[in-house]
Amino acid sequence: MRHGRPLGRLGWILGVLSLGACAGLTQQQSDRMKEAQEIANETTKLYGVPHVSVFNYDRLSPNAAAGYAGHQSWILLSRSALDETTFAPVLAHELGHATLRHDYDVELRVARPTMADYWKARQQRELDANARAVEIMVRVMKKKEPEALLMLATYFADANTSRGGLPIGLPAAHMHPCDQLQDLTTRFPGDWSREVTCEKATGTRPLFPYSGTDRELGLE
Ligand SMILES: [Zn+2]
Image (cartoon, rainbow, N blue to C red; front, side):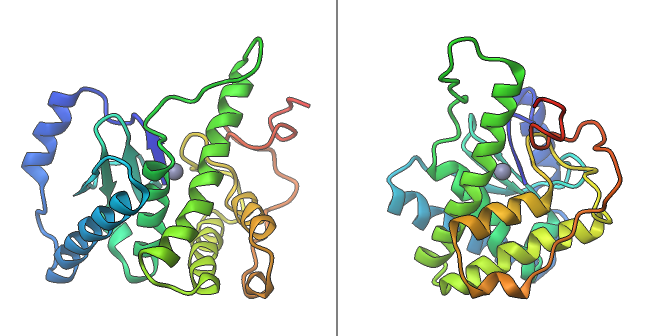
């Protein structure tokens, strides 16, 4: 789940989209795309933010299930984001960015901002989008809060398992999945978190381009 401006030039991306739009989607995946747009419409209306268009797009950077292109007001969902278990948390996370107005560049409210300040602010946005995702799953997708939390938490746990606990292959500004899960349990304390485990691999150094905590980046 990454956001920002991964898309480069507008003309290029429009060409790619028109060539690849909905090619080879199963009926179920097409239905999910339709559902995604309906959920997006309802969400943007509820939060009073500009309309976003949802597209299927499979050329996102590796390991990204979806993306939010704020400047274009697009949400791009890869085929993997249309799976039963990932659809709701991934779409809700991207809508989290949209409703938090992350189409605007981060504002650094310190006297002499550094790159570390910038990445920290970007990481914070990801965590904020996660929390907003839970809210959207409850308010728009009509899930109970513990269920919404568990869906998002399971997504992080799976992301961790697929990386063997290592902080590798993470999109820019994304913390280790276990750190994202930890933030969720701090914001939403409750029994729900007992059902999910997320363990980091130990004894390893973070690999570029991992953007982890200050300590892990050697900034403290
Ligand atoms: Zn994100």
